[in-house]
Amino acid sequence: MKKIYKQNLRYLFYMTILFSIFFYRYSGSWYWTFKHKVKYHNFIAYSNDTSENTQKLLVEANLVLNEYVNFYKDTNIELKLNDQLLFHMKIYETQEEFKRYSPVYWAEGYYQEPYSNFYLEFDTPNPYHGMRHEVIHQFNTELMKRTMPVWLNEGMACYFSTCMILNGKFEFDKIDYNSYPAWWLKLSFLRSGNLEADKKTYKVIPLIALLQDQEPINITRNVNLYYLHWWTFFHFLVDGKNGKYKQGLLKFIQSEHELKDFKKLIGEPIQLEKEWYEYLKTFK
Ligand SMILES: [Zn+2]
Image: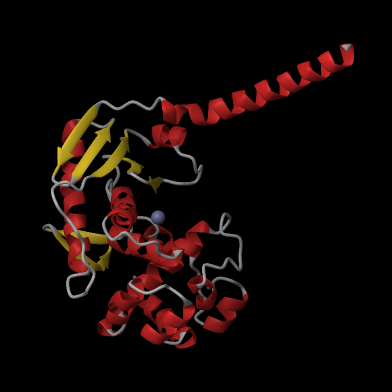
């Protein structure tokens, strides 16, 4: 009887520790509070930044939405945008506050239906790139209503978040090196100039692996390298070779995203890999 009591006590002790760890790690998100709720067109922001800063951010979010709709303008893809459709955002005041509530320790922003989550730091050169990235995931899910392979979803999000916006117009050929993952391009994408040699050392991840969401090298330890590939490859498919592959890409987005669809609608990965590797030289 005494033994059973001791075992129960030990069990209770372990459960208390486990519960405490769980509570400490996740309780924050249950109690997150915001200072302002701001609505602008199709967006509702719950924000801990000032309402003026939040308003400015929403103006840019609306530009991203318009450009996203424009991206699909000559396709059969029907985007049902109406006044009832609202995209929700949680805006943290600082990186520190964001990290306290983020489920992924290395993330600088994330989308978890129905919220885009990111922070604003108005003293940085590009305070909006996190928002621009996350809302693309949000549009893909809530407006486009399609599940995409990782390379496609992330590549598209980076495509819309790394370019300059000048006078309210997206300039996709002008890279903003203050945005993620563009700032890693010069630091961690040290290519030798020889594609096959770079593939052997995994400075370049083989395209065939990326297209099938495979991880020939550990993604957690090489996350920036993967993002650089997803971003630049998507960029190449839209704007490379004078836009030769864009129509195929748009059809692929509407397909089942199998490798055979890619080959049929866009081309042979082995050839595209060579052209993309050349295209990388245009990123300055
Ligand atoms: Zn993303």
